[in-house]
Image 1 (cartoon, rainbow, N blue to C red):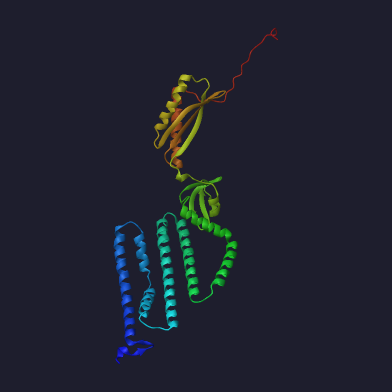
Image 2 (cartoon, rainbow, N blue to C red; image 1 turned 180 degrees about the horizontal axis):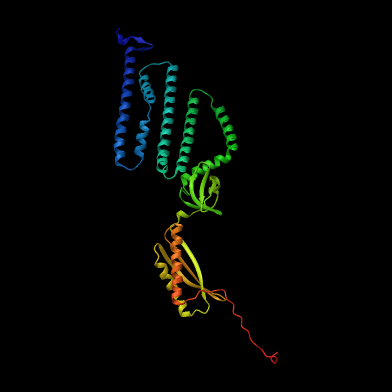
Length: 354
């Protein structure tokens, strides 16, 4: 009987050599396949603008040596007759390695997705970047907690009581920190939904100002009078919030009154005169000008125009130019604005009439 036919631990020598050869060959094939896939995906990613191929490259780069080695060992074990306990241990090692690799892939997915978002917003939206970083930490904790529970379950540990204990403890912690958690999730909602960003001018109830920072618990706003307003993130989401920076254009309506004795011929020229003054101002669109009402001592006109920018200073400058232009035209044409007046008619009667 030759050497290769000799038996070692219930297997012939040739079976051991075949198993080792399969382990080595499988390991090299997997490593070479992974490197070729990474190289080709990188070349494809350089030609495209999508992020899916970049994500695949990142996940392949995070494929660990342990998983490849366990897969190779499991493939080699198929050529051997191993005891039931050895097969069970090898299967458990394979499952644990796969779970660890799944956690690494999940961690890489979160890092890739949120890392890109943080890089985009770090320069102009530091608060959003902070919230995204916190979200990344929370997601990673959840992923590795699930992986740990699955690993313990495969090792024969009864995780039912552990999950129940964690659930009760989690409920107790959530009840104690519900205010903080509400603000945290509100911060994440602001980051994802983006009802406003840093630099927007917002109004909440009687308060208004420019957003300076979006934090994990609070949002800070600089009011027009200079003081800093601090809002709870949850309160902001539950309030009716007006974001003036999202305006495509600003509607402006104003009125003025002319003297009651202004001739009708002149009144007919007023809408055209007002329109000419409005159309002379840039970034403004005329809408209408009408004689609105005839009062006891005043003839009231109503004018509407649109400012095509959302900047408040541009609106005020445009409105000032329009009003000054209208006043100058009225003065040049002798058109008088109405003033509160009251005319008293006195009739003299004789004693005989009485």
